[in-house]
Image (cartoon, rainbow, N blue to C red; front, side, top):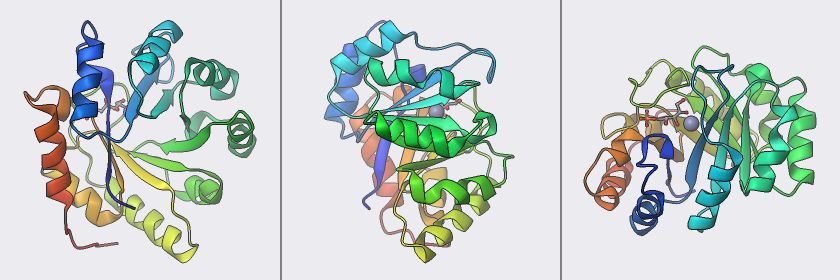
Length: 224
Ligand code: DX5
Ligand code: ZN
């Protein structure tokens, strides 16, 4: 699978979102990563439904909704209705992950699961054959601009080996602290989808930054 780059719009300029989205589209992004926070699973609160609907209208790329919310099963439908193409929930707070994945597919969207830096990989292995995306948090969720937690790479390698052994090809996504130093490390470990927030949106030329991330991962030797 060619490397995908999904800018996280958490720290974009929300007063000028059409321009922000146009710039990442023109810059070659493959999807938009939408960080949804409820003030319970994480302290901040982000993106009401109306805002999500407006952003989806502004941009033709697929939106992956990263739900940092408790009791995701109670809330997923409104994000589907708002236009998310993929809904991704945290395994730490899902009552019945398999049922929720089934529900998402029945509603016509793709499904993803996420684990925090200190959550073991076992739960992911159990549902890997059911999902289109697995997200490994490489920072504690809640805020952009944090430092990458290198220890997460071991879980990514374990998961990549599991995928190869079981002929699975989900998006393997990583989120938090991605830049030119960390991108090649995660690519070597088996990540095929980079989420990058501040590294893209704090740069002056989004297209050049997206390309630099791709170039940094080009030809890295796998170490899984
Ligand atoms: C953190 C979010 C991330 C965040 C990444 O809770 O899930 O998507 O925006 O930001 P950077 O790339 O700045 O670490
Ligand atoms: Zn995220």
